[in-house]
Length: 89
Image (cartoon, rainbow, N blue to C red):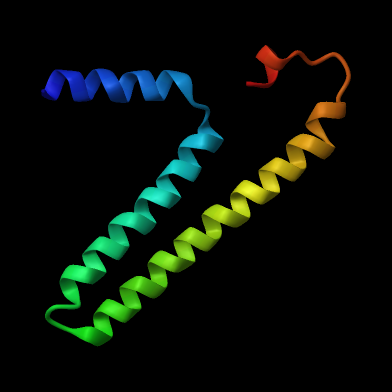
């Protein structure tokens, strides 16, 4: 099972660029933060709300990152001459 997990991570690492990995990290941090906030909420409501706030901030940063990269790619990178899709990746 550990070997299959390592193989899956190696495949993910080979398939995705740095930008996509960063976006995955933001979303993963937000999801894990919300899960942790749910568990902490059983003990301390105020701390749980702070953790949820940080998680939502991470989700907002991921959304902003996705929008900015989509605009940059569509408005600038697609119009650059002499670059093939393989070179951009």
